[in-house]
Length: 258
Length: 221
Ligand SMILES: Nc1ncnc2c1ncn2[C@@H]1O[C@H](COP(=O)(O)OP(=O)(O)OP(=O)(O)O)[C@@H](O)[C@H]1O
Ligand SMILES: [Mg+2]
Image (cartoon, rainbow over all chains, first blue to last red):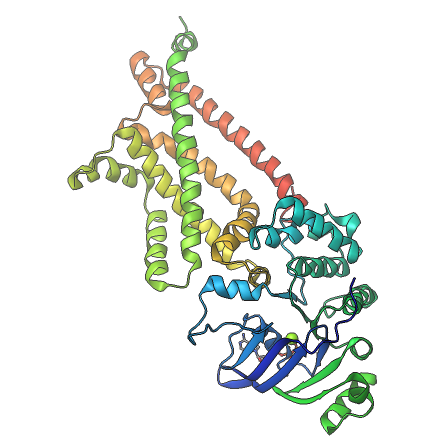
């Protein structure tokens, strides 16, 4: 669609982010910059805080400290330093798109209407416009023939591709993926990763939590490693996978290879 | 004239009782449905100052014999200078009573509603109201369809209680014919036929609605 964006514009900026659950620190002073058009993958073992980090970005979790800006707009806290009113929060949230591990499609709506629901009822687009856009997106994720199907009739891979189209329909500035292939049968992983790869080639800004090492290496502009809530390594994929600077990451990669 | 012939000649009374019953039933059950939805919406919030009294009210209603509520509205409200005629007392009592049952049915289904879907809605910029009415409520209604169908039948049967507060409905018609001509058995058999017929039709309609939700994976027909 358009060339990979190489400008230095910041899409997401996270500063000094901390979050605890029941007194246990799950994120500790996390700093992360994501430039427009970049793909950042987040790796780390189970429980290291990857999902929590991603969910803070669209305020599904509220951090205890720190700030998050999306396209220069701070989320969750208004200019006066107070919690954002819900409507304002919803607007900033809609600037991000999220794809969940468990798809979370709305089962009472068919595929097409899953995709048009938010554009019509949140963004206020006309039905015709939203449907035309939805059909383009379905084409993009290879789901056009299933526009009228209901989610319960789809395979996991198909559901996830619809979920991706649904998020894209909001024309978000950044896409957040939380282990988009972890709930899939192995033979369905490829079709979803292929869609995400296509998006990266089109220049979408994306933050992807994943356990797929080959994918991370192929698609990332930056790889981030979380360990017990700390970012202990941030590097380009080449460096990260061939010459990580910490023992912890080296161990992690060895284990993933075997 | 045989007893049945007497009833045939008085068929207009049955019909008018029947239409009155259907009117009361249709109006009160629609209102009850809206009340149930409204209560579910109010229970969505996490403000205990609202939700706790509401839960107590719902449970209080459910644990009350319907007849007592009808009496209360008809004979009790005038003490507070609110006068409803028998018909409106009956409709009001049915609406509130079954509205609470609807609310309880909905609430049960809401408890098992997948939180991931709510998160997906939030992530797509939905706020509470639209999320509730467009995404949560339709699914809750589809999921609880069999229970709602059952509740409709209870509500239909409860309309018969209104004879006691002098509402001129179907049972009242049977009652008066039975008394006038001393033919209770036949009169009440006719009335049973009416109630059964309506119930069967409702069952069929509710079952047909099941196809709609089954297509979406909600249940099996
Ligand atoms: N809502 C919550 N309440 C309490 N503890 C939580 C909550 N969400 C996450 N945690 C805890 O925070 C820690 C980090 O969780 P998180 O889900 O972010 O890890 P993760 O890196 O995504 O792990 P996984 O790879 O298993 O998805 C875990 O110990 C988890 O138990
Ligand atoms: Mg996770």
